[in-house]
Length: 73
Image 1 (cartoon, one colour):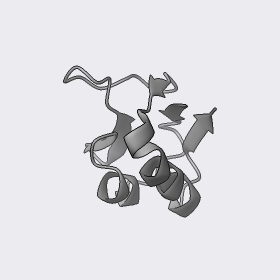
Image 2 (cartoon, rainbow, N blue to C red):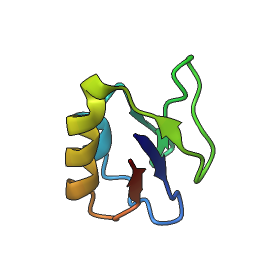
Image 3 (tube, helix red, strand yellow):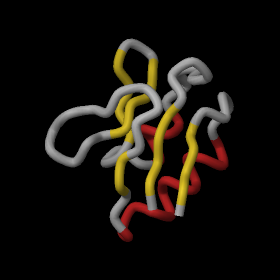
Image 4 (tube, helix red, strand yellow):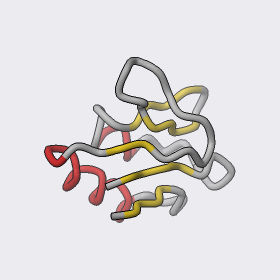
C-alpha cells in the first residue's frame, strides 16, 4: 500500500501522527509521510506502508478532518 498527504488540505490536527506515528509526522503544523530512512516525503509524494502499519494508516485516513490523506492499494 502507498500513502501520501496533500499539504494544501492538511488542517494540522495531528490525528494521523497519533494513530500512525511510524508513518506520519507533523512539521510546522503540516503532516508529512515518513520515507522509511529518517526523512520526510514532499507534498503529494507517496510512501510505502508495511503490512504492520496498514490498519493504523487506514484509521488515520478515515478520521482525518482535512481529508488530506490518500491511499492506494
